[in-house]
Length: 440
Image (cartoon, rainbow, N blue to C red; front, side):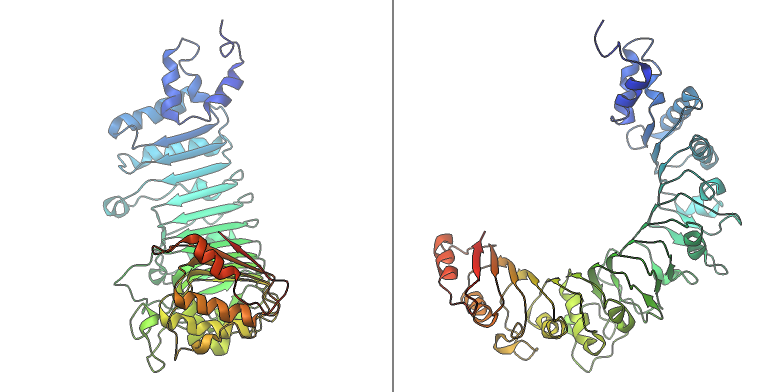
């Protein structure tokens, strides 16, 4: 007898739980003992792309029937072609009754399904065991009156719409999650949420909002967004900036990563804007709400531009010690001095992008961006070694009296010898005798 077959059924089921269900099911041909063993795995990962059409529906029916009432820890189903919504809801209720902890549903319902009145079973919004819930491709119009998810810690919403015109369904969902810590919202069209533009949760610690930005959408009909999240410590926010932020409570914020685009005269790229152009976005309260942040990552040149256009709203970042920004062409550098002047305790500055641009007339002329910057660590991630790059670094090293480390990543040599570029860097004069130069 082989050693694996001598193991108890529970151990074998646990081993099979690490395999995709389709592969685990192949073990059923080994012997009578293995015929249904795969169905007792505590992790069910069902993908309709692997077993298509009616065969998939029958396969899932068989798995759940054979496994009886055995506990299920994780249930994940991806079924783009929905043949019988009532049947799928029966599956969902089945696993909920088995004490599922982690549930991920991606059914890809089309317009015809929505028109026929499909909705998730109410039981999913009253489950007492769920710790993690991921919903993708749904329209949620109503919640049960007794909606309550007392154990839910993580909620992921992808391409989910809250379409009720009379009730704030989204707010009601958050209110039903008293211990929610992590909220992820991907590809949500806020402008269609006529009653649900408030993110309010006293327990929330991590908040991720990400929209796929694309040409053609200008964000002009975007209304407002309110953040009442006093205990959020991490914020990832990638989206168009709405018309206003009536309330922003981010008092506990430690780290923020921003990829935000203000709309200027119905143009999504603010780098083409001038001072007199009308701006339809207003991030004033959001910028003020970032005042306690310690680590800030500006992931696009549009985000840096936002701080330029609304520079009067920039608070004193007393706690900010780490700042990274991604410069674009020319004008995006004009927001840099306003950020640095209000960051008296900044220690680490990372420039994620090409170092040198002709920024005269945009607030960076004369290489004055870092003139009064107290940084100890400066990192350049895309050093090209051009004449402009060398002059820019010469200025930085000559002015940054507190600098202890300059770290340079050579991004592209443009047919120049890397050793020669390194020699040029090491020979640059430095205002700080403590400054070391590291070249990658």
